[in-house]
Length: 179
Ligand code: NI
Image (cartoon, rainbow, N blue to C red):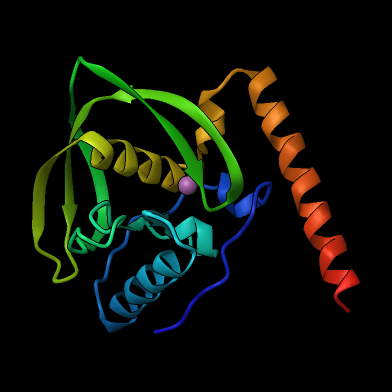
């Protein structure tokens, strides 16, 4: 498995809409394995194909392995479609591997029903709740070119992007200083 480079905002591929997957083959399964490896390495709990520069409607997530006592729960999700949402909303402090070290509360439906294909091509339908509901909505947003900061006010979004630019500049300067 390979750890892939994660695109950082602003990047045009992060604003683009991913295309439905037509053929689920070994190449796609390899991509999904590499995406999981990249996500665990980051580390993060979700990763969408746009973030590694592939405009295909696939995402991986694992909300089960944040602590050492919890068993890993890797999920590989192809062509996801939200088929139902709860009226109840919930708010989580979200972050994103493409917007490093920036966090903000985002309100979303507390539960979602999602139809998708697994890596064998079989149709699945599942209800996601709690952190998994937030995570899968965040990742499906990525496939539509939407970032979590797009759910915030212009003021808040501009503030986070300004902080991100400052962070990236500092990292660049540190890298240069290190030779
Ligand atoms: Ni993200």
